[in-house]
Structures are given as structure tokens and as C-alpha cells.
Image 1 (cartoon, rainbow over the protein chains, first blue to last red):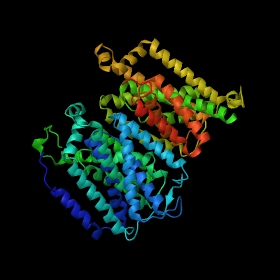
Image 2: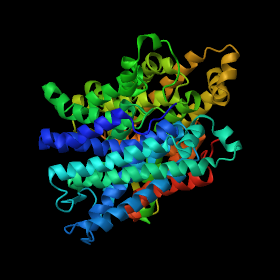
Image 3: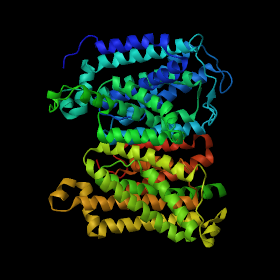
Image 4: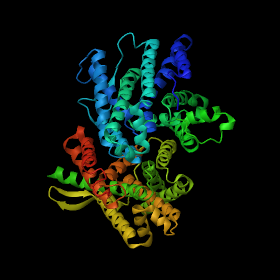
Length: 326
Length: 287
């Protein structure tokens, strides 16, 4: 597989995204693109873990939640310890604590594989959700933290959008390079032939935990942006729904390439915003629509929207080829 | 002493309910390697079916039977129509069951709304039973019935798995599925029956849970989590393990809530962590 230095399609997409504020309204900029970039960034970690490492972790939203709660606790004045720290140290600490949480989840999950990983990370995610709801001294229980805003000027639509874009682009480029680097190749080797790699002297657990840490950085950055996007954090943000949404996003986008996370996130956000308008009867039935969409993707295109795209783009004479794309 | 005794019995009756749900989950997982993430949705659906049947017929026993039978039928359909066609693709089966649980939860919310229901029990099960424990002379009868049902389910499962031909095939299948298939047994029929029984247990638990606690949206998530944790702690695929796991989790949850309310769930997590660190295959699981 030859890898160009910069994929021309990625360059075009990036240029279009940079130019987007010139033509799009604030609603499209923040509620659609901004949100898709944030969710895509969190899901990107799962693409790395699941698509390249074979570890389907449902802990990404939990890690994002740890980072989001950290920012909320440290920078707000109304609730909790009211530390009112500046944003920069709070964000750095959020990234560190998020990574720490990802490391703990990784430590617990790497000893198992396949479907066991799903069970264990799901259990951890839901336990964290119940913990945020029960704990008042630090996390303010059911109400959580409100009025968590980024420092000026990042709260305004265009700057906030660029902040999301910068984080997402950095994350994307990092992962796109990482999966082709020796570490990424080792990870894929561990996915396919863990025993063989182990006998070659690779440390299975350390590689896997490192992957969890990388995914944790992405999730933490996404969590910081998410708490600013919502301007609040409460247990609802880390409940089962959002935890599973991340998996849905990564899977409907396609796990075979890092861009799948963002494709899936965009599809998810568009469905969230517009399926409801297209079907007035479905106003309250978002979960039904996204669940059905998810089911159809899993049943008919296990490699997600990316897979559909590839099949459409593939020259006809190639149709019978069984070679793997990536 | 009163608090301790009440908490102990609460923990035991909760553990009983957890065991009924988790035993179905572990049965399906042990044989078919399907992590059925729709198990919580089956529990909730069982509760709603039980509620409707009780309201229509006035019979609580009818509700219990209907809850088991209806959800067993749903399980049968799921296995034959969906999971059978993706055998061996564990991740895909899990994702499908997850999609189904999202859809089912929303459909149930559509039909039954966000209200909380409780299944009416016969009068003689409604009140308190004189247990005569120190500090706790009376205890709700229905909760004791839950423990009784769990014991009956446990014994019935044990007899089924160790004393019947089908049970032996299932145990053999858990140990070595390929060998069972190779010896001429129709594994698809066995899978279908096992899925039906496992799902039926979730439905049965839904009716019991709907009688002793309540049924409402979100309970599906709670009981899915419980099934996962109980099975991870007890050992995947082991019915005895799910009994042990249910006991540990039920007691930890109740004692945690009674004595340290804002950190109750942390104990569940600690048990999970300890088991994963020391015995990743679960307390009674085999490596």
C-alpha cells in the first residue's frame, strides 16, 4: 500500500473546511460542522482502537466526560469547589486526567479481547455514569455544571469552529500517520495475529495500552470542546446514549480509515438535525431512526459509509477483486 | 441492627433478581458467544408484557407465565431470523444486538411512555411477612418471593443442565462447540432453544422486577449493566458463577447505598476491577 505524503482529497476537504465560515451560517458552522468535528474526534480514538487495534472500547465518551468534568470543576465559579482557574491549565489538566482515565480503562480492558472488551468497557462507562449521578460533593450529581464557557474570543461561532477544526485536523493527521508508522503496523499485527507478534518480541499489553492512551488524548480534547459546545456537563453527557452514539458514529462511518469517524459523525449530526424535520411524526423518535440506520449499516455494509463509497467508486472491472483496501 | 438486617435482606432479594436476569445472559453467552446487548431490553419488555397481562386478566401468575413465554418467543425469533445468519461473527452479532436494543427501547418508550408502572401482585404477596429476625420482625413478602423464585430458577437450571439430554448437549457445546457439531447434533436447534430459555429468563425477571420494584424506561440499561457485571465477576458462561456474582453485586450495592450513599456504585466498580485484575476469566470462569 503506497501512502502519499498528503492525500489530495484530504487537502481539498481541509481547504473547504477552512473556507466554510465564508459561506455558512453560524448554525451550520457550530451546530452541524463543529459538533461533527467534536464527535468525530472522540470517535476517531475508537476507530484507532477498534479498526486498527481490534479493541472495541465503549470508554471513549467516558474519557471525554472525565476531561469535560475536569474543565467544568476547575473553571466555573457557581458550583462545586469554585476554583475559577484560567482555561489553559484547566485544559492541560483535563488532558492529563483524561489520559489517566483512558490508561485505567486500557489496563482493565487489555487483558481481554474481542467481545469481552465491549462488555468490560461498557460496564465501566455505565458505572461512571451512575457515579456522576450519585456524587454531589465533586460532580454535583444530577445537575452537573452549567455555564462552562471557553475564554474569549473562543466562545464566538467562527473562532470556536476553527478551534474544533484545528483539534480535529491535528487528531486526524496524527492518526493517519500513526497507523502507517511502526507503532500502527504493530497494532494491526496485534489485531490479526497477537500470538505471532508476541513470539516476535512485541509486548502485546504495552502496545494496546499505548493505543488506549492515544485514543484517550483524542477523547479528552473532544471532551474539552464538547463541554464548551454544550456550555454544560451533567450525567446525561456520559450516559449510555452518548456512549453508544460514539460507537454508532465510528461504525456507520467505517472503521477501516481514520476519516470514517468524521464521515460517521457528519451523518449522525445531519440525521439528528434534519431527519426530525423531514418526518414530523419522528420528532421524538431520533433513537428509532439512528438505531435503524445503524442496524442497516451493520447488516448490509459492515465497513460503513466508507465501504459504500468505495464500492461505488471502484472501477467495474475491479468488482470481483477481493483484495483488502487498507 | 435493623438497618443491617434490612440491608442484608434487600441485598439478597436484589441479588435474587440479578441472578435471574444474568443467568439467562450467561446461558446465551456461554453457548453461542453472543453478547446479547438487547438482554436489558428483553427484561423491560417482559415487565411490560407482564403488566399488560396482569391488567387484562387480573392474574399475577398468568403475568409471570406470559412474561417468560412471550420473551422466549421473541428470543426464538431473534435467533432464527437474525443471529443465526451471522454465526461466528461475534462482533457483528454484538453490534446488531446493540442496534436492536436501541430500537426496542425507543419503541417501548413510544408505546408505554415515560411512566413508571408496577405490576399488581396477589393480596397475600403484597404485605409484610413475619420473618422474626433480630431488629427486623417483618419484611415485604414479595421480596422474599423473589428470593424463592431465584432459588427455584437456579435449581431448575441446574437440573436442566445436568440431568437432561439437552442440558448435557448445551454443556458440551459450551466446552467445545465444534466437537458437538461434528458428532451429528443439530446445533441450530440447540442454539434456538438456548436463546429462547435465556431470553425467557430475562422476561421472567422483568415480571418479577416489575412486581417487586417497578418498570420504567432506563431499567433496560440498568439490568443490562447488571447482567454484564454479574457475568464478568462470576465467570462468563457459568450459571453458578452468575449466582455468586449476583450475590456479591447485590449485597455490595445495597450495603454501599445504605452506609455510603454518594459512593454506592463505586463498590460495584471496585469488585469489577478486583476480579479483572486477579481473575480475568471471572470467579468461577474457566480460562
